[in-house]
Image (cartoon, rainbow, N blue to C red):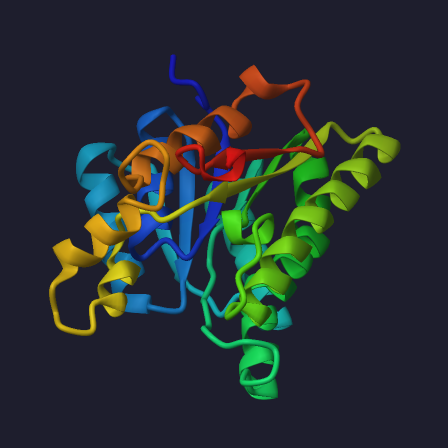
Length: 256
């Protein structure tokens, strides 16, 4: 038996990077997974890759996580396709570089809409289906930037810190409701995903990864499965007494 056998999961931002790795790992461990992403073609391709390895375990949906009606459609889709929902992984997110003076208000609002509002909407519309399905686990992908601030990451720091605290509020609500739903946040540092390529101003992506790795006590950046294994633990019944807390996947940087 897999670690999440017979569970149904919804993973946002699953067209590539962390979301794709999380969806693949959950499927390999027995879950049926609805992958969603604003990149419709990319998320369909990821679902095909999962189904090639674990037939029938994946489906895909085009989904703007900042849109309320989009969340209503996504929750209806996972129920229609797989019959319920046990695992909700809020992974979709964007970043922005700018200090509090330089950051535009439009960028501030967009980052919060995608990174924070999406978690609120997913919980708001996902929890009733999770209750109906017999409990479950909400895993919110925040960032080490939600714990450690940077001078030029005003909007991203704010949104990701809010995700951490919202996760705790949701955990306490669900505990008080007695619905068996747990809520936790995951806080990665630099992970080797395509998003890092955008930091290579001279096109040397290896140099960027090496530079970032030197900032981390363990001496390297992470890989997507480092995060996916943490999500798997929180999604499984192994963590049935874990709620309202966070897992830092940061190579020791927050210990400094």
